[in-house]
Every structure is written in structure tokens, then in C-alpha cells.
Image (cartoon, rainbow, N blue to C red; front, top):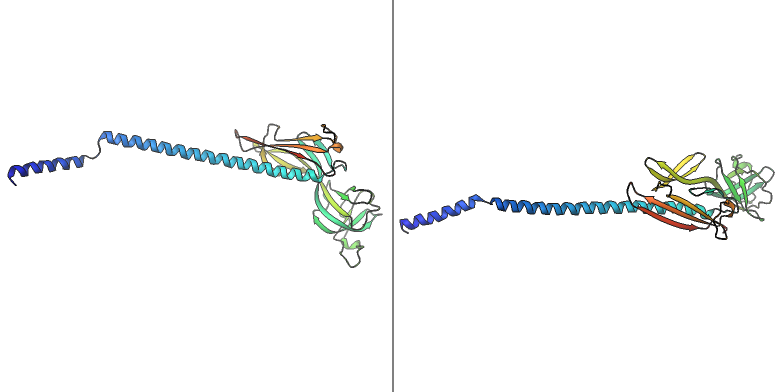
Length: 274
């Protein structure tokens, strides 16, 4: 190769080396930055959307759980109560007081003069609290008798079943129990009031008695619509008489926080003996 050719080849190599060393141009860098920004923005919007969707689904789950739990508790108590037997104490549009079943037992001994019953096969809570009452089977119809304190040791009242079970609990009642047979079922009731109570910034379904309140489910709409009762008589007309209630209309409106959607659940419930 001649001297001139070597000079020309070196010049070409130098130009290539310079081109390789210069890297990206400013225009190319701007294009990369713009594209990267667009991709990052799209990814951010996707993440924001997914987070919002997850939050909405979680809030909806909370609302639905609150509705199901509150409806289950209220309908169970309403179906176990009887208007004709005086189980409904106070009926108002946004609260309800009733005798709620809390225990069960079977009569094993009867002391009519002392107003005492000896029970066996006791389940739940039959021990006396303020506001408790007993629903006692009688051949002429069920007797509702207010509870007094547990009267004495169970061994003081013998069971009439020879060689059978022994008395587990002796209870004293107000009112006659003449004619109550051995083997009669006894159901224990306690007076509760269901209503919405505020705790913090939210409203919750609460069950209250003489000893205090117990939060059950929520939160619910606090604008006066979160819990409402409708009382219908046998003729299908609205009534304010607790003894004439043949059907309940129950409406629950749950919320999951400020400015969130509200979900509503309505139920129609018939009490016992209706």
C-alpha cells in the first residue's frame, strides 16, 4: 500500500473513531427523555387506577359484610320474638327494644308455692340479669314470667325423674307457675335495644341493655337513614302498637367512609307465631 493510501485509510479510521466517541446527539437524548416520561406517566396512571379499584372493592366488601352481619343479628332476634306474648317492648322508626332469647333449659322440679323451678340440660345464659324473663311451657299456653335472682343451691330442689338427671340450676320467678309440668321447656330472655350509636366519626349498630352498649356492626349512614324499622299489622297496615306487629320492614344503609358510596339492604321479617 502506498503512502497516500495509508494516509487516506487513517483519515477514515479517525472519522469513525470520532463518530463513535461523540455518542447520542441532543435530539436523540430529548427523544429518549420524552418517551421515558410518557411510559412512566402511563405506568403511574395504571398503578393509581389499580389502587383506586382495590380501595373501592375493599370498601364495598366492608359495606356488604356490615349489612350481612347486622341483618343476620336483627332478623334472628325478630324471628324468635312474639308480639302477642309481649316480646316487643318499644317500637320506634330508628330503634327497637325486645326480649331476646339467651338461654334454654328443661324443668326437672317445680316448687309452685315458692315460685321456683329446678332446671337441667341448661344451655346458654339462664343466670339472672336485670331485665331477664322466662318463657315457660304450660298446657294452657306459654307463660311469660319475670326472673328473680337464682334462689339457692341446685341440690336443694330434687329432680322428679327417678334415677335420671339432677337439677343444675334453681330459678325463682314472679307470678304463678301452678300447672307447669316436669319436662316443660324453658327459654330465657333478656331485654335488648337495637339502635345506631356514634363512635368517633361513624355510626354503628349497637345492642344496649341496663349494663351498657355493645357494638355489633358498621359503619352505617349517620344521616338518620342507616337503620329504620317499619311495623306492619296482620291487615298490612302500619301500626304503632307493639302487640299488633305481624311483620317488620327492616332497612340498613351501610357506608365505608366519608364521600363513599352507600349500599342498602331491605328485609321483610315475620316474628314468631305470625
